[in-house]
Image (cartoon, rainbow, N blue to C red; front, top):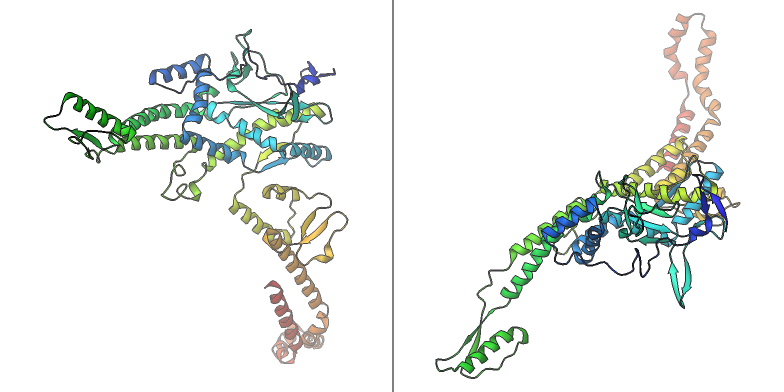
Length: 529
């Protein structure tokens, strides 16, 4: 067993990095069975007690309620999923701390980690903190090879193959607040009422800052809990209303000579026909159906449920446009189908900070030691209009000599640098400029590359035209300036020179110069068009 010294001077056991700390067990604090249901039969008094308890003591009941709300309320789950996916589906960039070879190497290794499929799954697990106030993923490090990195594997337990992910979502009920630092989580323990500290480099803890104060009070489930409770009442009453008034009134009629047994038979038939849709009665009796309640359609219950859903949409997405939309549409329009842009940008920024603090720093520290600067994971929010404007600006400015970093432009367009041997784009029509040493070039005449390439080609051809035009400029100008030179040579004073200027125009021959200027202008116009 190898022992390393951590940044705080304490021993760091490498073999424990690959073991799961919070693995579920049949008994103990991490039991594998579900907690008792909270959402069923929720009442104002019960909800108030749950909220109050989560503020000062144990948040287990609140976290259970938050979990069950996602399972029981389709609208809340849908809106919460929109907000999560708006961030987790963003392109991922990794920016090196500098242009040095070492920093670029660090960035390449972090970039390789972000491209693994399980990394995206981990992001979705971390965004679970939006509803509950915080989310924790445990990392399993592969210490058998260099560099160490989070890595999953298949293992066999009791004859079964079990997949162990590099990042394992941990139930938020396994944690509690630090007794003095409300922003710090600790692992629950039966032996220690204040819990135990979380091991370094083992956990990614995402605490979305949705409001100031206790993280548990910022979860969106807390915001939506009252609406969930009220809607559960409304739906219950609505179903009861539909059960009573959704069917026509059944009236049994019997004659004056009907006996008690006949009347009881008719009553049973009327009662059972609603569910059985069949009944047997004597010929002297009949059952009529009267639709006297058609006007009582339960509209009030529907309107209340829809109003509550809109309040949830406001709290989760920041708007209500995408919650329902017009008939035949999945939302009002394209501009309202997502999370509000400022909310999405804030969620992305906070998730970036979490990843850079708990994953990137842990990876670099374990493999290369503490650094002054670290690479950064960025969740790229691209604006199509901004990218088009950037491409237009580059098309105009680069040919004028503006020097722009290729890495910076690639980051803006979320493009990876080409690998050796890959087919890459090249300037259209520039086959003579192919670099065969590193990459095989491929011609492309579309998109932003084409625009930039065309601008460069135009500049090159215009430069060539200028060079051709200036090659014989002295011969072309001689018939124009020769009379002027003769006047200067023969004049004895300035007044004599000035007096001779008006007669020079008739002596100057500009035919060849005008012809050459017209020819070059015609060629230049053809190049630009």
